Length: 476
Image (tube, rainbow, N blue to C red; front, side, top):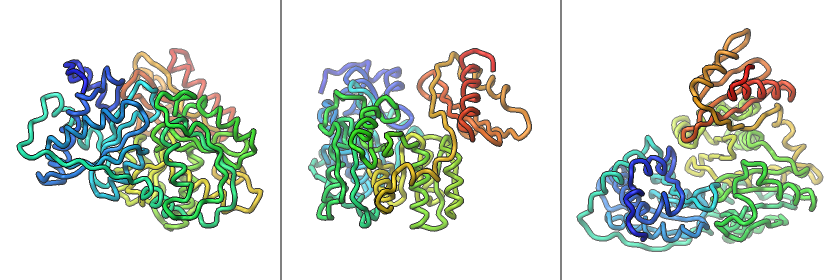
């Protein structure tokens, strides 16, 4: 472990590092081995008190390809073991690989990753048994207080440590969730961004622990695991990081392209033209396929997905359920409603049969299965045409001096008039007959996030520019 630095445990640093959904910060200035050790001990006390009734318990720990991962895992595991908890280290893993471990073994888990963040970051995603999320209202607040005040010592023996490779079991489980038996030969370009997709894609799309190899020609881009991200950031929500994949798809005439973020829990799709497929469109496609398997089910979508998503769900006989943005809200609503699937515009896709957790690889399998079942010559763009119905701005982040003042100005400008509806579920949503937009404040930065959708491109652009002008101090 690094030398003890009191600033790591200061209130200011803990506020900065222990966020709404996970622990994340710059290594080692904000998150080091000492803090990982303390969080490991605190995590055990919180999950043990909740589900183990004081018993010793066992947890699973995985990590991505960032160089700081193994040392942080060792420190976290030691903190957990000092609380009498047994530890199973699963080694290199995608985040959905860790969720698999938590679900299949029925134990809490910790995944060391900073997801799509730059190389200098690392973090910890925590879950209870069955991949149930740990957020501010479900344990992170208690963990922070324990770390800040000092985690009490445990009067008992040191927990045991063992290692278990679950990659083959994870791959087999995913393959059994999606019927790919009828897939025709496809050429697929995969950009792993030097992240964990380079580890999981060969396992899942290959022979998958004895299952037959899929008839896919995989063109591998940036599969070497490298937490310094030498080619581009592993953040596919930024279009700049998809340029290499788009170019390769067009060059080789591929049927589709797949891009994963650093921990491979998100997946973005590129069609045969090299065009980015909206995650809303992929949500609608997967929803239709899930409803074919589970007629009449509920499907979750967050409030910034295209209005095509609830339309498709209803057309397929399902019930759309609208939620706030964020995985904890979607997972909670899925548990409450027994929804079979949930999708977010950020590229996260959640599956009831995968413990309501998100999986980029499952989304990729659904995209491959959907295209692979069509007649020879059918393109991805033609397959998705019926799900892609409206013009969208994508999410635009704007720095503002005062989020509340700017939001109120937007409300005053748009909140009246015939046919206007206002919704405050998550930020401000203004809906008109031919367009809608949502403005949400960032929880961690002085930003407002804008999403606009309209029936026509010109209308979308007009509303987008008017709202942005208000945000930036102009006049609509």
